[in-house]
Length: 478
Image (cartoon, rainbow, N blue to C red):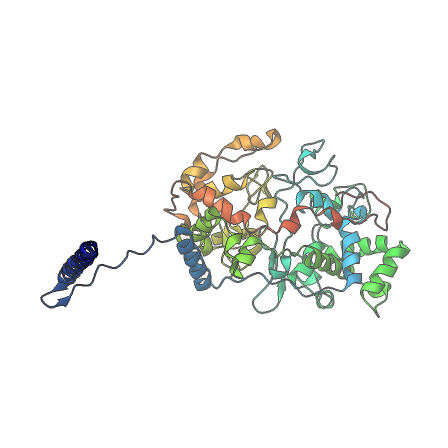
């Protein structure tokens, strides 16, 4: 009995002890909760804890938004491809562009200065036409003869209305066409043109002696310099002797006999080839505009922002093709090299647009080049004065000083001694929109990154554009 009592008493003490512990814990918990409530409450009610700070902004996301907004404000859209061109016309234009039969001495073709291996240029500051030896950057002339201007790019010409550096072939606002031939380019010829002023463009290099016609030694060179129709007719007479050409012309223009055609039909076919085969519109920039943020690097985005906002590039390069929307010409303070275009004895100057309009206010103004695929078309400038893309971009940074300090060593030796010391005359009509343009550190490199985003990768290798052979059987430059 004593043992039972002892164990019963001990059990009760343990139970009561546990209860005391639990009671103490409840008291402490209550005090703790009261403390929390007391801390969280003020005299006027609960105190709201401060919000959790947001994560730091993503610089790239902000840059993307800025570039998209700038593009929208400037009405920039992906470049649209041209309408399809009938195959027969394209193939006729292809062989004509590569056939040396269109040159006086049958030694150069249009492709000699527009080589597929050189992105449809020739990789030279100034081209070498008649009597030249070799191709591309290595081409030479036995007498050191150069053309006056750099071979222009041929990409996406379906968007253009003006051609040549001085715009001497152009479609005017009233729908009429201006060319060096004036009324010798008849309304019947113009009726053949399917691609606006581009259809007229191939009619003029074949007339120029230093480019294709030659000074002497052939029946076309013997024709007077004042008669375009005679030269064009002589070229068609050559083509008429080749049955394959007769067949190809009549296939390209169904229902029209070859004997009823003029050189306008040939020029229109070459334009059709350029429209069909040299339109390249699938670039990182286009894909970015369509919503793919990953297409543009940070440097390209910064360059796009500078291009559209801070460096004034879009004062001139303002279309989806990045040429001049209103067809204006500009003097961008480029040094003058080479033989020039002026007819005054001993003058190697080039008055640019003034040669077309006759207006002294247009002196030394040149066409604003389109910038798509510009990465591929060095050198740059109306006389190829800059051999790298970075070089031409940096020229716009404090432009007057850049002109004064132009690095002539970038030119091939035969051209280095041709630079004119006429800098003050150039600056007299230099475009005022370029005043006070100063780049920030790294801005030129960013602009180059943006310009490279305008390259369609499909334009990097154009070797497939050359035909296997041409109807004349002459060799092909490619």
